[in-house]
Image 1: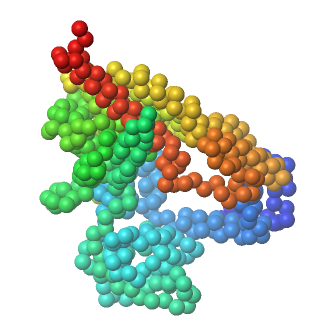
Image 2 (image 1 turned 30 degrees about the vertical axis):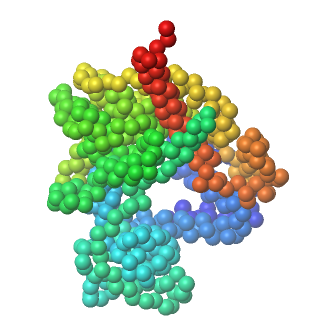
Image 3 (image 1 turned 90 degrees about the vertical axis):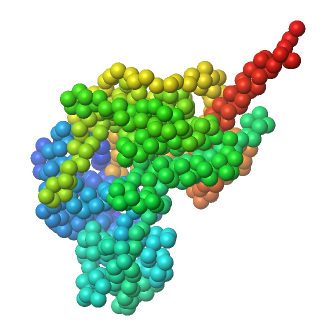
Length: 576
């Protein structure tokens, strides 16, 4: 390990960034090191780059050097704490990745965390933890959890010991974070005692806290809703936005017939009912950054928005096609609907978006989705579990989402480069293909009005300061990232950083001026005042705001068309 730390320890603070060298950080854009000497030289450059970044962030060179030593010493310690399960997981995943990017091995602990993420619940105390030096530190106490109800444990407290019930306290200073978490978690109704150094105390004084474990629901990761109000041609629209971050389901509670089991579909249905009570004019389903989850949830969630019919087709390795995933009841919500996706919308997200698009139930807007069109099955092993790709899913139209993803009806600019992000950029992926379509009812109303809605969208974004700013930010980022080489000379890097800030300063002032607001007078004041107003969706999330504009436009043109048809069909209003 001294080889790793030597370049830092030998780094003279006053010499930081005084080298006329450069570095290529992207491994895909640099050649493989031909010798240990070349690798060591690259590592020294990595240290120089890290040092420069800290100095540019206003760290004193001496402080930056100490911070780097601390950072890499911690990483080395974490590496040394790896056990045989960790090593086997690395080996097994290297093997499974040869057969596709979504097959992998889970250690027992990895599997436990996977199940927690799927169910959004766990049995424990309800605290988010991290490692700080050799201590396990509390980041956040989860609202409503046992620790929150008990009221003593708080953010930034350091946990130095753990005991089960009345057993002796086990010192956990220097332990791996997952091993500490394993001690703290436990069955509902049992007691865990924590020896804690309070955030406002010194390291010599500790207190012991007893907490009764209970079921903790991770509500901050579940579906949420908000109201988006827009106005078009003097007509106000009140829209509901449902943010769906994942397709989760507590399978254990479901199998136990728990009437209050957690699932995406149940949460979204509740949110839909709440939005209907608020008399929204339409709903946006926000699937951005939703990487998928439960296939069953993708089916049942689609069922909320379409009447009886197939949702997805699944073909196994033998060519057998399963069409059993169907909507089995009438739609719970039949009002105006729009789906928002981006490049990180994957798997179950693509099933939902694709089905609603194929039925003509909703317009899909945003950017091309990820393109994960495969199904995985989890098999229990003597130690851990194996997640393995067993089939592909297809839309009711017969098209696969594999490799290509879902193409939006109305495309937005993407902050993610499709040449760098997505299934098509993974190794050993299955190709796109098509099978027979399955009969389904298609409503072509939205298709009929698509050109009108697209034209209105284009007119808006060409005039909207926030959207123009987004376009220009994406272009600026692309142009700056095109150069893969970074200088290791501090003066050159500082000049580059200042040029970047100047470019952003100019773009922000252009946006403020276009909106009739006062621009920043200088870069120093701009750095202090450039925080985005998070309560202003048009400014903080122009993509979502424009999705709402499209839905409002959709509601308006269809309502106007319906009124026109009523007038034409009324014999008392007919033109002689």
